[in-house]
Length: 331
Ligand code: P6P
Image (cartoon, rainbow, N blue to C red; front, side, top):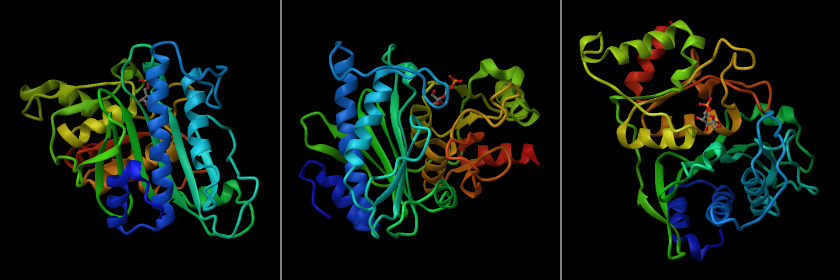
């Protein structure tokens, strides 16, 4: 794998994890795209940077200029990697297939190029989420069915959080590591080579304005937390909600806790809001590798076999003790 002098510490860590050179090359390309997105975010704040038409994305959500620009940046950095058979982007309805495909094409890269973009105007956290799936190589274009069948074959997963610092969190074969972008331009510097999620916690993250739409399990769990030390939990809890999954998930590695975006009893949200391939699945792998747990109401997220590339699933991710408690409430 070509050493990328700009991301030397990331490249060295990746090599030590034992994933294939092509997976590591994809992650370095994603790291380079994150540096470009980071710059566009900061340029946009002063009214500069790339402009793009805004419209509605395939999810029917308001598409911000930076959504479109970030999507273009990721696609450009992955284009030309001959081991990529397809891309799945939150911003694009169908799988993105390279014009020419060779026998070495054995990866599908799924990504949310800019998660939490409703936070842009208020300068609150936003992020990029990615998942690298393994598919059978071969010189034929892969189908959506091939991608669906590969949902359980994550070769790597990670995210970039554009916050006070821009950090990259990634896993390939076993551990979860965190890197921070060096403002002096030397790329992502290793900060922690073994992130874990504390087993117990006192934080819960959920959009409480939807309480009337929750099912019994979530309602019971939250009310027990709110009851605090006088209630069945015998201790006080705290709540946090960033409106950006990347930020709320990142907090789990430091304070522990549980992030919940449940199925809601309202039209269009019956299986929640978050998408399996580029939000739930990668975050579930990171949590699992860090000693946490991730379920979709009943099943573990990593055991789900989706039926669509933009399928939404309920998401309950965090400290094992808390997720186990919620799983027990689902019975
Ligand atoms: P709500 C951002 O739009 C996102 O996809 C996640 O990053 C975030 O956790 C969630 O939706 C916020 O949803 O309904 O609270 O606005």
